Image (tube, rainbow, N blue to C red; front, side, top):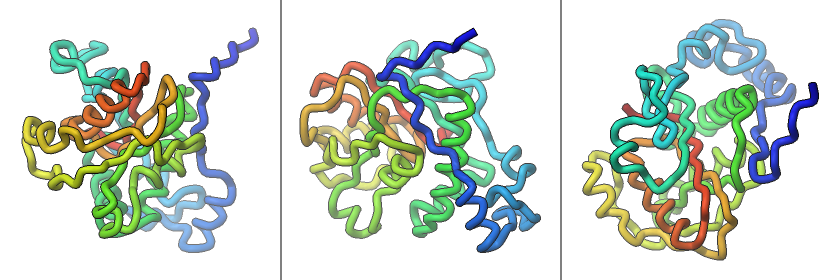
Length: 240
């Protein structure tokens, strides 16, 4: 039987690591980042990869892990977010949190690249479609200057093309979201984003961690006002 060709708006661009990545890993260390055992194909050995907190069943809208088998969590049934679907690869814990903090806060680009490669492999193996270009969550210029990079933009580039890095701008500098309540996060982000040019009909937002979803919702609201009809989210981790 011939498998149907995915439509253009649902292509699968995810970029799993090639042989060059394995060669470079073996050249540099050839050992698991977590347990230091020999690991020839990946910076994590098979056991440590399996022990990561993979999400297998979750709410389709916000990716909150669910044991019930229901498609939506209670929160998304009563107050759905302005994006259509979220796919988070892991829960935020059990080693994934350490890798994300190392990448985001300590400029450990190898940790971010490892997470992106594992995520791209998982998305590719699952046949996960990609609706529209990848749009990284934007950083305000002042925060970009302090950090030196936008972790979401790097993740989008490593996950696979096409990427639309400058579609939306964070033009208002806001206080850090960490430690704020969901209501405070929403108020903090009101009017913080604006479109730089007319958007396509569908986009896929890329972020490192989904916590309350307030930042993603603020960006999605801006995109909806610009005429985007379908908004999906790809994230490394989901906080629970």
